[in-house]
Length: 112
Ligand code: 5GP
Ligand code: ZN
Image (tube, rainbow, N blue to C red):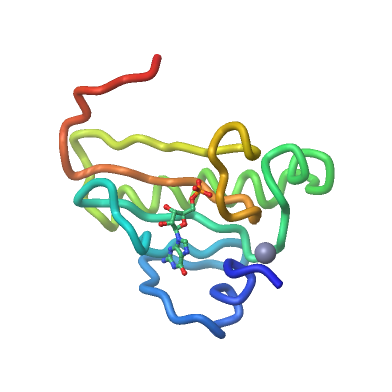
């Protein structure tokens, strides 16, 4: 059982901002910025490593297209940030690969 698989299947409600054959993008339940969406492949991969090993590139390409669509739909034209937490040490809490798209404010704080 995986909560993002349940969201993809509509068993858990979510607010969708974008969807296509391969991915959905939803609003994060606990937003850290005025725009905080999650781009989630419809197929379950644990993380980026799992996706790299078991996807022929289809889902990876769809993720990038979806990120660009989300930025357009949300109007984050002055910039946005994409974050992926990969694995427990990086703070990944839902073990279904997903990409945070954050925007709607200026980010002063930087890790790198
Ligand atoms: P992670 O910590 O794995 O990088 O990110 C997981 C994200 O999923 C968190 O930002 C958390 O707020 C979000 N999240 C967890 N459960 C749900 C849910 O049921 N619905 C939505 N929309 N977001 C969720
Ligand atoms: Zn899943």
